[in-house]
Each structure stands twice: as C-alpha cells, then as structure tokens.
Image (cartoon, rainbow, N blue to C red; front, top):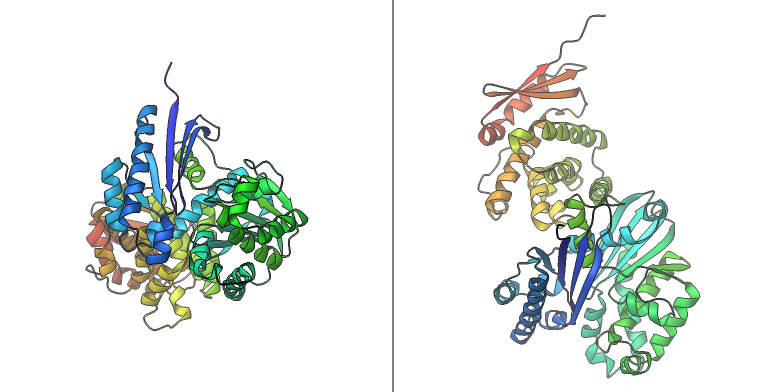
Length: 515
C-alpha cells in the first residue's frame, strides 16, 4: 500500500511563524495532521527601524531549523515557505533571507502584498459556506495583518476593488508605543489614529455599493472569537451586540490583564485592541449588523493551492476570475475603450491558445496576456501622448490581487510595448530573470499582433485561426469590411514576432461561401 501524500507550508509572518503539515487526498480539502506555531515578532524591528536585527535573524534561523527537522521526520521534501511584510519592508531583506536559508535549507519566498492577500482570500473562500452566494451582494473583506490592512470589495459576484492601508495591529502598537505611557485615554488616541486612514479609504472605495456582509480575516480571530464566548477554532458569526460587548472589554482591560485573567497569550494580548478597533470602524462604515470570522490564514491558502494545482482538489471559488475581474474594474475606473479592449482580449486569447506549441508557455501566462489586453490602454486617461509609457506606470502602481511582482511587471511591459518600437535593453526587461524575460518577449510579440488586428477600434475581424506554413504564421480571419489599415499596422508591428519566433505573420481572409 502506497504512503499517503503529505504536504507542508510555512508562513514566516511578522508576529508568528506558523507551519502546517497536511494529508492530501483526492477530492477533499487538505486534512491537518500537525500545526506548529512559534511567536517571533520580526515586524517589531522592521516597523520601528526599517531593518531586521541580527539577533532576530539568529532567532528566526533557530526556529526554521527546528521546523526543517520536523519536515525531515515526516519525510516531506517539498515545503512551500513564504515571508510577508516584515521581510518585504526590511532594508536588509536579502541578507536576512540568505542567512536563514543557509541555516535551515528551506527556500523562502518573500510575497508581494497582492500575493499575500490572495492566499488569505483563497482560504477564506473555501472555509466560508456559500461564499459565492454571499458575494452576489456587497461584501467587504477586511484582512487585518500585523503590518497592514487590506480592504477588498465584492459585489454582484465580482471582485471590484482592493486597497491596502498601513494599519496592521502590530504596526499600530509599535508606532504608538511611546504614547501609551503618556496618554490618559490611549484607546481614544488609537481610535483617532485609525480614523485618519479610514477617511482616505472612503475617498477611494467604489461608490454605489450597499454592503450586506463584512468578513474579517486575521491572526487575532482565534482570540476574538474566544472572548465572545464562541468556539475559537472554527468559523463564527458575531452579531453587533456580541462584538460591542467584546470591544468594551478590550477598551477597559490592559493587555497584561487579558493575559492573566482571560487566558490570552501574552504576545497576542496587545494586538487585540488595535484589531478590534479597525473592525469596529469598518463595521460602522459598512452598516452591517454581523461579522463573519473565519479562523484561517496563509498556510491554509498555500496548501489549498498546492492541492488544486496537483489535481487533487477542485476549488469552490476560482481565484483567477478575481484577478481578471479586478483588471476589468481598474480599466473601468480609467475609462478605457471597452469595445476595443474586449476585441483585443479575444484576439489575444485566440492567438495564445492556438500557438501553444510555438510559445510553450503555461496556462498561467494566458491570464497575464488577458490582463494586459484589458489594461493596455489605461494610460490614455492620463494623456494620449506616449500613453503606452503611462500605461506601464499605472499598472505597476496598481494593486492586482493574486499577481506577483514579476507577473505585474510582465503585464505592464506588454502594455508598454503593445505598439511602437521595443527597447530590448529596457531596464525593467533586463531586471527579469532570463526565463521570465523570454516569456515577456513572447507575450509582447503575440500581443502586438492582436492589437494591430483592431487598429481602428472598429472590431472588423473575427473567427481567428492560425497555422504554420514553412516560415510564415498564417492568421485566417473573417472580415466585415476593408482591412488595409490592419494589414499595414500588423506588418509595421511584426518585427518583434519575427525576432522572437522566426516566423513572418500574414493575414489571410476566409472566403465567404456563395449563397
């Protein structure tokens, strides 16, 4: 009998290092075998000094070495290990990661904020019953981390908006630590501090959304549920009265008293009031009368993705749809030509799917070229002059959930070079690893053809089919009108395609049958 498939994930968080070991079975969510948690407030250094101290690097190395030994006991060779904002924001990130890698032998990936929130939301969507039904109505997901808060909005079943705020529970505590000893009303002072960022959020959040649901994610949910008299290890729903009572207790109780009298872990007790304060502000803002409080996080998201990608589990909610939906709503905010965007999107997807043997890229890159098609003209909102350059910068400055920094760069580069000359020595291209750089060139070359096929934004061409004939890529299409402009523009923009693929693209119109 074969040994059951085991998997593991480690989250090197800003306040805690968390490892989960699970068993993967077909058509079932990962089953937890063992959880290991070690409190280590790495974020305390980063948020105060901008770097991680050598003593904390040593401490982290020791913890990670112990976790590596645990993996060896289970004979698990492949463990996805990630770090978040404490490392992401540290000026000595590279040195710290290298030292820890060397000590434990585990490769640590520092996630972008978008990737970090993606995994949290992936886990929440799987844990919350009827999540897809819930998001048909206005739903705000409040993801409270140690370093920041992410507010994301769904409505009518679509992901429409996300915004990051540097209001994490540990960060607030560290920033205001000196004032705690001076202030008569520290709770009121903290509330005032939190309110400033919430006002900025009000200016940016999508208008016209009526909120029905507020989902709270975060490492403190376990303790908040317990203090509300609920099962601390399970998904809970707290009514407004339950939460208000909990909030009043936290406002009146010092952290050390929470630890001694209520059994809250001493290292988590100081973080409960900042977390509760953020929740209360958003509860009042949305006007909802209850909170959805799942107890889940990064490691669950990592392991669900591993099970999904390995073909062992089908996700209830497709996260790639959220990425594409986020791009559509971003394009809408910048008033792009929707018709042109849809036409080029279809052409680009058809080209990508029908040239798989040519480009040999995974399906993940299909998502990237689709995102680029939706966003490629976004810079025109700023100026029609050199709009491709502006599109690049808008995309790079935007938050797109589920996209890594490298992927975001590739999307932005496709938009930057969807027309006009391509600078092969562009700094952003040169900074990519060779494999990612080649993928970017392949996608740019394909996308330039797709964009050229709708030169006049008149959606003339349809029914795209491709075939390779000797040294040519023949693109067969239906045309409802004259396409001289499209032929000319494709020829003008085919240089990149010829360089990358060694084929000359040529348009061939499909003959219409006589009736």
